[in-house]
Length: 522
Image (cartoon, rainbow, N blue to C red):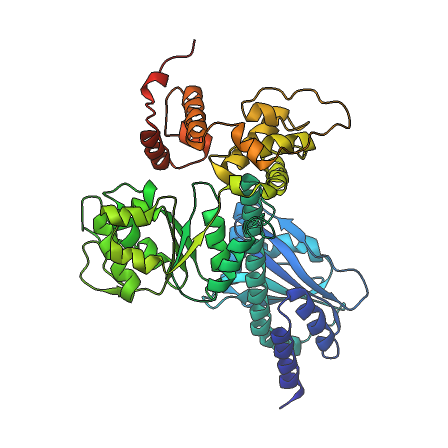
């Protein structure tokens, strides 16, 4: 192996050692210096979208600072001529006194009066990606330098491709991070995962149950009122399980139209029904390897319960209109606010499915039964509202906390989040208008330093209506504000932060008719 081959082997070694082009070029420049009267090695990248050439890596032997990021703009015609030349010619040697080819004239502005060797860097599809430019000392271009440049083109092309992939990954990472931050801002969060406020207080027993079951694949049934935090607990089980790196998919069974629920859960084949123009994977397939959270499972029709039972028994399912059995590996977490045991007795829910999903039940207490969590929840939601609304954060005062403690919270934690956000909006970033947000009017004046003590639990219970009466009044207030509209962006369900189907069910139970509220405001 001669010196030339040794040199190329060293160059290849440096290309493999450095993913970043600037590091590789700087080291390669040092390797080439004994074999060439070298002043600099520059790598130029062609950007067809912008129609220009950018200097992306420079190695110098004269001690001058490298000109990274230098861009050479040109007309569309000039850029196309340069591309055409690069497709046709592998390299060019240009002494300082030589006339430059017309296609390379734009580059002459960069290297006027210099001894230049230019090599074309093409990708595997033979498409020009960039140029390698070697600047030599005046009058030193020799025929042997052509052979050396020819040998350098392939490793330098690989180095350029590696750098392009690294740039692309960096751009994708930056884009993903920007999307994540935008989403977190809209959700009013600082992190992706939900914060479990009360883990050391009112939800301590719940989190102990979570730790017991998380590492297994056992089906879990979460029981609790609407808005009590069932999805947060479900995510905690998933994140502490061996499936944490796999999908977590939430499906609200009560929000899917009955005629679509089979297709949504199990998927469908192309042409299986009118409108099925393509094959579609259902939520079970999409959650393969991970966790499927079936919220409001008590709303599932009897026909779907049969198919769900089979998936839970042997992991087997058929798409709508499909004949082939598909296998999935999922962990099911179900949740409901309904009394499934009573539904089983009344024939509204399959007994065999009940036994399958209720292997490990977890009861999530309503907010009124864990008042010790209210102060921290209020502070948490106040900070979240400030981020989401772009307001200066205002934390609840001691007086605000007492008002929150005295409220029955029929909508639980979800309702508190809505109340705090409403209070932040009403306070315009200067304070939290808790009283107005609760519909209680402005807070009474309290002498400075006099903070009312919390009333005993028994006294608080007797000071308020029953839970059903309070819930009914709250729903009527929402209907009054939305002029009897239940669903949609301006509906009572959105205002109360609950599912429209759940709201309609509760209204039927409480005997509330939205019709009287459907009138124009005075």
